[in-house]
Length: 402
Image (cartoon, rainbow, N blue to C red; front, side, top):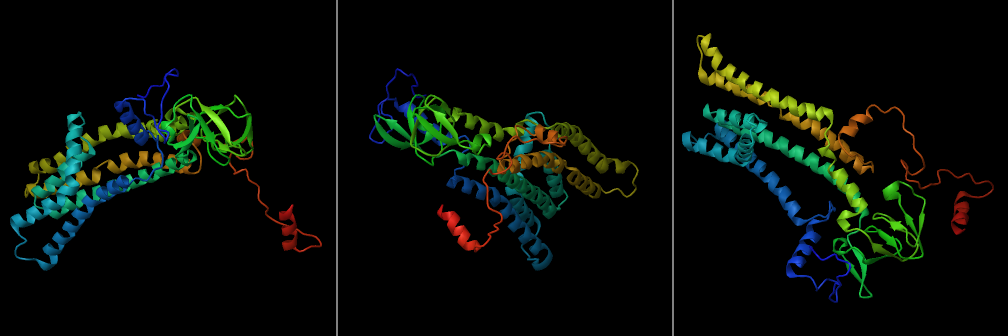
């Protein structure tokens, strides 16, 4: 880490960057600058590339599946038989099926033998075993598409939460060697003095060095009335400087500011699970093994009392039972509902510390608000004008001129 000892005097180049620390420390500093955004809403190219890669396997499988079905039912080319047909559907299966199989192996290695990944794997591999290739691919493809919808919903909720981060600026003006430099907030050290111009947002927590300054604290407190601070008083990240150029001595690193901690808490809110989520997780652990053993019973037990028992027919029925009994919809929908709720609340400026607090909200019958600006914007608007003896347009011009 970079030396934060107050007695250590850093030296800087003409752009305000440190030149005194070791090469390793500079590398760490650059890494921190890139990764320690604590949820900053930066749209990187590699994020778009990752999103494209998520959809690509399903697109490939879908294209191959549809082509295979056309070959099977309409065109019926002579080459599309036996091993060629098997290999075609295996290639269609791999993009969506291989990741699920890997997850199944990981779950088994951790002792979770009967996971949703295990169910989907044995159901689709069983379909290949009885030569229902297209159905095996289709089931896994539908599962993959469902996962994509889940990922999209979670990403949308995360974007709503990240919208809160817009109140933190991407750059800050720091005074080094008597000169102002524009740098990333993550590069600023404790004890340095930053400059906030009128209309700019405070990026880091600190102590006001200017005699007096007025700040809008609505982003933190909901209070729209300007808060006048005097020299020596604390100023927090997220406040908006209203009237004059102010200087603030930094008391906490960018990632340790009170606002960063609040935003980190909101982003980690889903870790605090509601009782319903905990119940569903426990239920799935019991439910899934029961489904597997019932499927085995459907496949094998009829051999004892059905005269014209055909193994492939009953295996097919058992596989259908496995697919329709997969608890993934149940396991996914409950947490997703809570996550979506937290995301939508964040989009509207309401912070929840955990999913369990959403359940508490259902029991509230009375809400008391202490001031204008808590639920409202705190900005008054003219709704109606009644001008007596004067035209409305002329009246507005006179008011605007005052």
